[in-house]
Length: 440
Image (tube, rainbow, N blue to C red; front, side, top):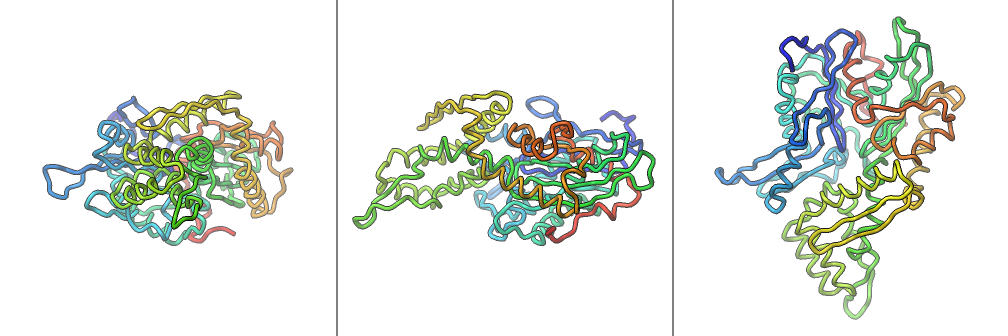
């Protein structure tokens, strides 16, 4: 960051399930994204990933990295490290107590502080002197069957206490809405749909004319724990897990039984898949292999766990998903120790896999309209953001409801942080601060 760059008056942090982004506002009505000089090149997107490995010089010591540096460390030595991604997804889960990392156990807030420390270091001068006003995005609804928002708030507070500043939490789509509204020249009722890795969130804002004392007024929000990660898991479920034994059987006391689905639960969220490589789990899988009707399939599953193939598998899944966003057909090709998958997938196949999720997203959209006491005809503009907003089937949900002419998109990975930083310059944040309790 050049020495002549004005000091930041506010910082917006989009701590995402898949990616995190930071922006600074310096009082001139503009926000600047923080760039990170990552191994693969400079980028404003910092992967929400952690890598841990044992520090040989210190008995029981644990070394670590975050973001793209964590990915580089893991790829350099996958067998000697533990890789975590999407750890934000357990923030509201009471069943998650800690991650087992070699000889240490780290709670969510401890993982979060490790992540933040590296984010600050890699942000260099841009993040060395933080302003007093810091805004952090949070989901409208957290991931999980029974998310506990109070627990998530407690964990977020402990995590972000590292920054030594008061933290103002704002619903993520409201951050994007504020940023988008800054570019509007006319009054409008704006709906923002943010499709992240873990959640799909919707907020509605009334935008006044430029120069109005209160330019933006939030009207209502709703969210659901379905987004990019769920779409990834649908691809895994269709293309990968049947080859690893899902849907198969095993013998027990003379009976042939279905293999319990619990053996494959971790594959739906590969932030947990990376933790399966432990003596107890591998022992259970070895026992299952001995009794399985198709032991070769279980051998493939063991190979995935032992060889830490989760990262590479999900990178291939993401590549297919992106390809199907622009093409009608895509190729899923994965090759690793003990596993080979080569399949052509049509966009229509993928859309049929995620159809139940799209229905629930549509229902949540209706809930956002109801919370704002509006109907679709009263929405003037719709702004789609987040990586999964690029999926044609997701976009069609909104085109059918509001008409193609009202839909806008762009800055899919950076709009939330940008808007949060701009919002940080507002004189009064009271209308924008997220409630501790989940909205109805």
